[in-house]
Length: 220
Image 1 (tube, rainbow, N blue to C red):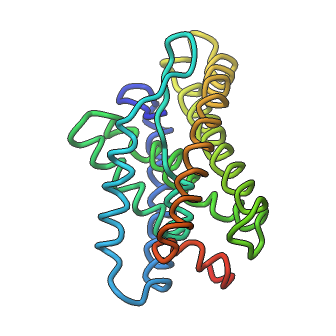
Image 2 (image 1 turned 120 degrees about the horizontal axis):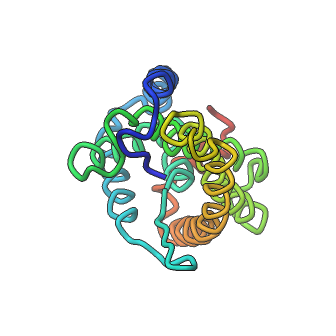
């Protein structure tokens, strides 16, 4: 789902950069209000974990592979706003040092993975309510993880589909179904892995799940 350089038109790149920058400013202010003390170390550790996790690919079908995105995982661990910032750090590092996602497409990639993934917290909240354990909570994490991948893929398909590179081969009529088909499957793996991680963390180290504290308190 990392869009490389050259796939997006200048207009789409600028629009997504403005949208993502606006969200990041809001998330920074909200995160600072949520964490009265410095949360830089928390962001660093969480970002490093997701960075490493994204390097592990798993097979899907027909030679296609996927990897963990981690947006919902970070949302439950950190809360929605810090999760957006943490995932953005991961995407910037990938773009700058590993050419995984283009610099010109960074705004789109941040929106598709960091913003949609981080804000999936609110879907977890909607489904689970104040419950932080049991089947209802597990279902909420699973559904939010899967949907965050699918919505990110939908956004990606739209962004590249309206750009000139793909307009000659069918535009969004081709890119959206292609992205949704594969990422519907990838999202199932993402949901299963995220749910397993969160369940084990809740059992072994519940204190690190700051997002769960926000769920219980209803503070956003």
